[in-house]
Length: 150
Image 1 (cartoon, rainbow, N blue to C red):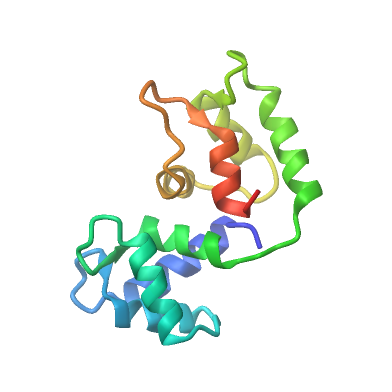
Image 2: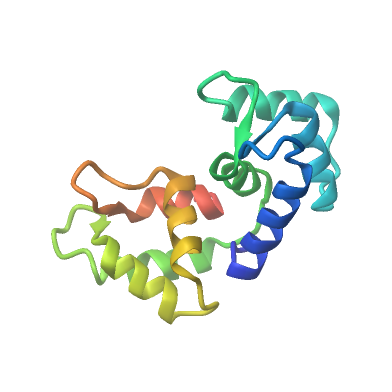
């Protein structure tokens, strides 16, 4: 399942509802509640494993970009052909031939193809995948890999 604007907004709404103190992050138990509200059948052990893997700063909390990473990691679509099509399209914008594209080109592509995504949704996608290079370009293979599991 792809991360459409509608899906991201739905996840934001659920995230906000379970974020009891409104600090922009959720605890382990709130993560469990959040994922179950999103119709994931997930055990407590799997929740613990996700916290260990995605709570990179070891605060015991998950923020929204980390939740998007969790969603991407837990969904297992069969998208090999779709993945190759996406990578081929992104490669057309790879003017430096280094598997990166400009952020403007990425925004343009995301806003012009398929589901219309807002600027905030595109920002969330980039942040969640940690695909931005030091010079501001987008590592498109890393982005695609994180979102749809190459």
